[in-house]
Amino acid sequence: MSLVETDDVDGGEILSLHQRILSDIREKILSGTWAPGHRIPFEHELTAQYNCSRMTVNKALSQLAKAGLIERRRRSGSFVRQPQSQAAVLELHDIRIEVEALGLPYRYERLERVKRRSSAEDRARLGLAAPGPVLALEGLHFAGERPFALEQRLINLSAVAEAGEEEFLDIAPGPWLIGRVPWSEAEHRIRAMAADENIADALDIDAGAPCLVVERRTWSAGHPVTHVRFIYPAESHTLVARFTPSQG
Amino acid sequence: MSLVETDDVDGGEILSLHQRILSDIREKILSGTWAPGHRIPFEHELTAQYNCSRMTVNKALSQLAKAGLIERRRRSGSFVRQPQSQAAVLELHDIRIEVEALGLPYRYERLERVKRRSSAEDRARLGLAAPGPVLALEGLHFAGERPFALEQRLINLSAVAEAGEEEFLDIAPGPWLIGRVPWSEAEHRIRAMAADENIADALDIDAGAPCLVVERRTWSAGHPVTHVRFIYPAESHTLVARFTPSQG
DNA sequence: ATGGCGATTATGTATATACATATTGAAACA
DNA sequence: TGTTTCAATATGTATATACATAATCGCCAT
Image (cartoon, rainbow over all chains, first blue to last red; front, side, top):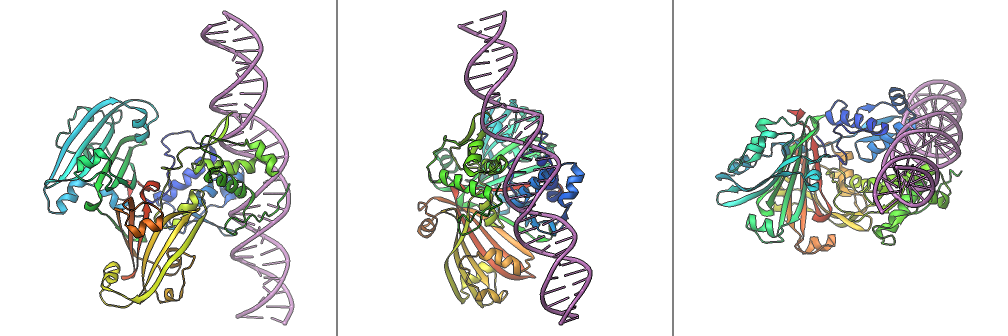
């Protein structure tokens, strides 16, 4: 919902008290329960509510303030800041639709498909704690004859076992997953990158050329489902997000 | 014992004690005095050195750990981390908060300021139909000593006349505008780009290096207010958007 | 009314203390 | 020799307390 620091993903982890307080409040803010401008409870109220000392509450609130989620004012209290989020459009990230919107024929082509026990890197990408079976896919999205985007995906087979039976030869895993797994949460990372040999080769561009990289991790009911990385040649793609601030 | 104000000057500000400790250690790390892998003094040593309680030292070290500068290991001590890289998280709406969340001192510096009658390109950027006065600004956001982002901004003076009187020498126009103009709508464009000579120069990177470009147009009550372009060096910045599908 | 001024209040910072927890190194044991 | 146990140690979290600081409210005097 908003652009927020996300170093921890609480998916059933053991949290210390101040982390729990922080997490509770963040949840209320991100879910919109507490709209921008809303005054969150005073420290002494939270102290009573959580039956803890003010220092503990203070630690949580200080961190929220540092992250920019709330604003603290002496004598007045702490208030939810304007998030000015823009994630709304990222949600509709379906490459087929993008390509067809350009009036070009769309096609997906599988490059690689490997079923394996998750490596440490796989687990880092998915945010998994324990090892388990995963499906690693690589494929190309075409707009007409030209490669439009390279997709590198990891699917957690513990969460979506049936994906292990699917070949994904010419249907992209994204739409396939959407129809089967109701996701509850997603995180995007967007960055620029220079194309390495592999990427340059797949996308038919020069090595070192700038690319836009969009990574998405998706959870369903607290469990990691998939991690996907889309790599677009810089010149072919602009991400557009449009929104009004009234979302609160 | 001392509630003494320590007027340590780090950009001319008065720092609390734990901020000063944090700042001192950060300085040693960023300057290379303490190389990656180096064990920084134990909490009880810093306690003695600064003549303060362990809680105060702990607060500083915890923040450094959260910012990713150091790694803390029980029974072993705290160590300078290797990469200092990928943990970077980016918020679009306020760069100062982004930078400070990394534990680095923030600074804005104006590079250029031109008042002019809008050119055709200016009108395209702002989405203006008729000519009128605009203010073109260029400035650099710093994280510590390093350029963090280059900002190229255009302000529609027909909509915000008072901006024409402002110098924007060391205050960024973004926060200034937010306090004055209630915006009603915004549009973002995000893309990757190779740095040209100008950009490379300003950001102190190589020409041709990939950059993340975030452009924003803002309207207030249907009238274009400003167009801004942020250019980030690719290697150090990742944009993170997190949300749940609850919004529909 | 109204402008100043102290009291009140919430946050900001720091202290001393306590116990929990993870990890290491060494001693005790099989 | 290898393993188990245990104490020492550094960090992690939380407590109660204290005083500082900034902002606001309401009272009072002009």
